Length: 248
Image (cartoon, rainbow, N blue to C red; front, side):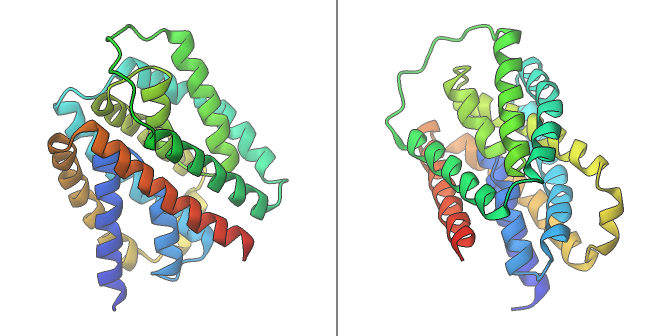
C-alpha cells in the first residue's frame, strides 16, 4: 500500500477520534507516522502536533457551533497546565524511556477501566469553580508533560468525573485544551519541522480535518454511554500497544 493511501487512512482515523471523542489524536498519530509512514520518533512527534493542532481546531469550531464548549473552564485548564507540563517534561528527560512508556500504558489502562464501569446518574448542572478547574488542569498538565502526550484522552475523563461535565461538553471543551497544548508545544519545536516529509503530512492533515467533521456528526448521533465505551476501547488498545513497545 502506498504512503499516500496509508496517510489518508491514518489521518481519517485520527480525525474521527478527535471529532467524536475529543482526544486520542496524538496517541494514534505518532504510532501511525512511525510504523506506517516510516518517520523517526522525533519527526513523528512534531508532525503529530501539526496534525493534532489543525484537526482539533477544526473539530473545536464544529463543537463550538453546537454549543458544546465551556470556554471558561477550558481556558483555565489550558492555562493552568502549561507551566506544570513544561516542568514535568524537563523531569521526563532524565527518566528511562521504557519506564515512561510503561507509565503511559498504565494511566491509559486505568482511565479505560474507569470509563467502562457503569456511568453514574447524570449530575445536575453546576457552576465550575475556578480553583477546581485550575487545579485539575495543573495536575493534568504535569501528567501529560511527564508522559509526553497531548492530553485529550485524559482530559475527557477528568472533565466528566471531576467537574461533572456531560459527555458532549467534555468532548468540546477537551478540544480547546488539546488545541492550546498542541500550539504551545509547536512554538518550541520550530527547528524540528525542517526534517518532516510534507508529502506524507499534507494528505494526513487533509484526511484528519475531513474526518473531524464526520466525527462531530457521529458524536451528535451516538449516545454518551456508547462514546464512553468507544473511548475506553481506544485507550485499552493504546495501552496494550505502548506496553508491548516498552517491553520489547
